[in-house]
Image (tube, rainbow, N blue to C red; front, side, top):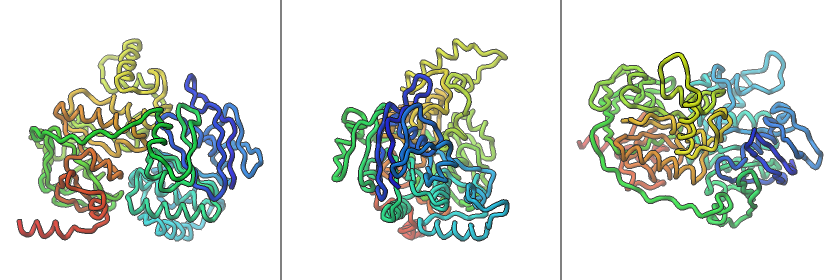
Length: 497
């Protein structure tokens, strides 16, 4: 299906998200959309998929002017979008979420739909049980479910907004192969990403947005430096690796056991010191999220001991862990980390926990402006938090952290962020390490794991590797371990010990 956007404009209050963008995407094409966080990429795609209505401009499908009034309308026209934050129903079973939007009367054929779900999942190497509950899935697995649902609903224009942030390298390779196959069958693919290497490998052409405008376009062979300059108006380089200077013990786990909804973790022991950054790598659902939540007191352990700064915290609540200086930043920013409907200023008031029945609005706004300036958040104290871009929501989560922390736990801290925002986020996190905090983080981006970790813990089907020095690891070796290869060497080392 041929898609054309003409002079699309969209504003939110004083923020101009799209300033007259025109873009034409032919059928059988994989169109890349690049841009810094807040450049207007997601807004433009939400207009095409019916979530937003443009203030000005028009949409043409197969050369015919089309008015898209809602996401359901878009699906009927053959346009489906996978969002950064999956739009699903956590209280539902996977199969019930999967069949949403499909015509079939009051009694859809759930058995047939379940078989088709499993068949589609097998094509991608996804492991989704139709009878499991959506709220037991990780963010990455929820993305997987939404990709399969859109394909099953018959989307002919498939918009993917940061689809590779929650899946492993083998799954990404299968996804890319499938997208190329779908494009070869006449489907139109629009691939929104901050990952230059993904866009360069996959896309037939690229459009770059900056500050709500079309900054330029490119076609293969791509020049990475030219794309970066179009995105930011300047060159951006990765910082050098900085080695940790370990201090006192912050986190200790001894023979810990954890029971999850779908797997068990047994006999986990390791220690993390002040100043260290520990990366947790593995396919979605391999146990790393379960371990991270147990280190925050959100998931109770069933065996062993958990210590924070030499205090036994086994069996204690999340609030008790917080009082010991533990902070947890979830991957689902708007669902678990922030409160939709509240302003930035109101978030800072809540995070400070000031007593008394009255709120000093003027003081709260002044404090919010200070934090907004410190963390370079593109927003005002009065703006609702859901109006921020993904990168600015992540900066907001960091700005809400208390000053005195011993342990920071993060799920996908740079999910959906551009290069500059990623460097900024990690700069702030490294400052925390210099102040004596330790960090554990999960990321599906293996380059990020190796760039910022001092040591790496690899997870596979509920098993955890020994702590591996990041400096001696390669992406290839890490990928093999995540896929289950090479674990026999760990067993032999344990036997010799």
